[in-house]
Length: 122
Image 1 (spheres, rainbow, N blue to C red):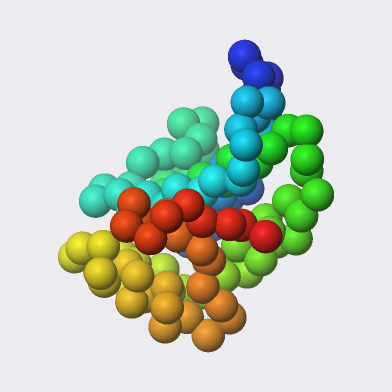
Image 2: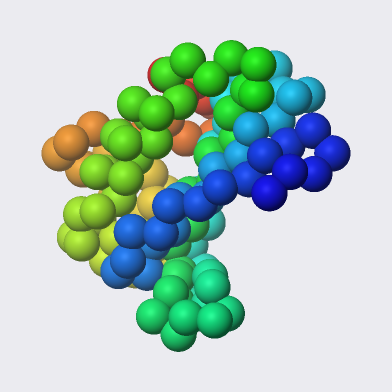
């Protein structure tokens, strides 16, 4: 899909996790947003098996896609871990989310918390 300077795609991995990604022409650096929903939503309304409650949205530079595919693959591997997903689901606050990500063995994706500045996704 293409709208007003961005291109949207998605990677649903199952187990309640989805990794939508977009390319934007007006972005200056890659960005990411982690959302843990209280209640699952249907990611694809035509398929009831696509209920998701953990979303990692990646927004990448349309004019500089270098590094995107390795980052997408890394995040797909990281969030394929069922123990990590359960820790994120049971998190009560931002500190619990950070602890769950920091305790993950395969590496921690950079995270924008609003406290420690912008993250780099490379």
